[in-house]
Length: 227
Ligand code: FE
Image 1 (cartoon, rainbow, N blue to C red):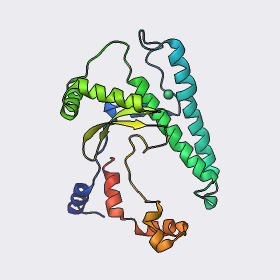
Image 2: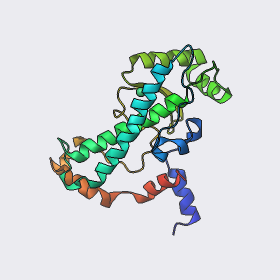
Image 3: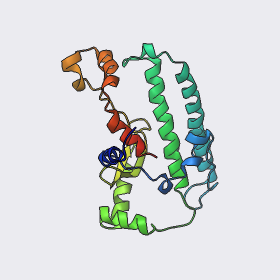
Image 4: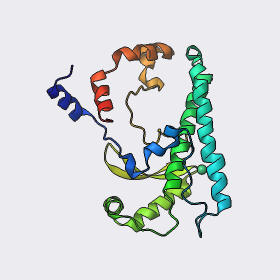
């Protein structure tokens, strides 16, 4: 049983800040929770996106990602963990496609729910944070647009919970980059630089030994930060 003093010490050491999903979307409505697509707010946005543009985007792409995730997670349940391999293995492909589908779902939800049919200006909180980071809203938008032009997949204005700083980031495909809004809880470095001196090419030995050496005090503090 953790004492209150220990709990406070652990909480103070927790390096991550809980993200406020309410600023981005209603997490409870996400396809990741319901298994169903969130409905489109608008069938069309006059002067920006037609029905013919939005409908297949929402139907085939976003809804398709939810269907794919259901299939992937079902196949993952039965996948043979003992055949895991970094060259090729069903578990590797399924794990990668799981992130591809999850990020696709979240990014499309943030995109669609972030569209408005009427011209709006940033509210006070958004304006203050953007001005703090980019000097003016116009400069922030200029940087965002440059990121979007440079992106092959997505550009995202992102709040980093560690340094509490805004970034306009570029993501080329759904699964290249971290899980959107994901808070790291247990992390293992799988680059060879992390194990090659001690394990040579016996990566499985390194990975197999790792769980015995998890600092659960630190990891538990991360979990508590999510409640
Ligand atoms: Fe899309």
